[in-house]
Image (cartoon, rainbow, N blue to C red; front, side, top):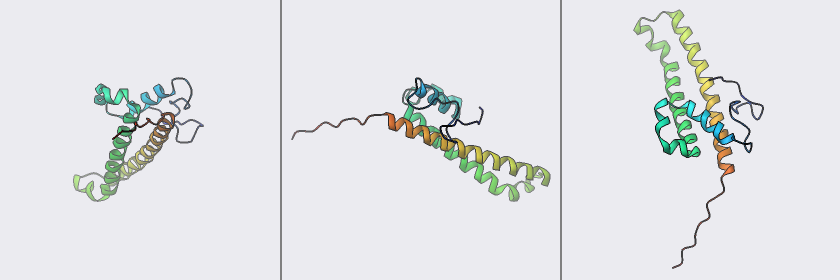
Length: 131
């Protein structure tokens, strides 16, 4: 997946159409599904309810960010014990730092899409319960 973003916001994914334009929700859902492991494509609850899909994508990214942060923070102490050379350790640290930046940018994109989904959904009117 390309990591270029559109002029709507520096964090808005270019693959997702502008909110309010035809098919924008479909393009947003497709982009969100691409962020998840393939096995989630079979869950109709996620594929039919875009706000749930966005929520799950956000949770998935939060867990990935934690994993990459842990890997980054422990690289210097744990990789030498595995016999990894200093050159490879430095390369690994750069890789994790780059990945952390990408994940944070993706998470910001998911938040923007979630906000756009929420702005487009009308509140459900509450019924008055007569006692």
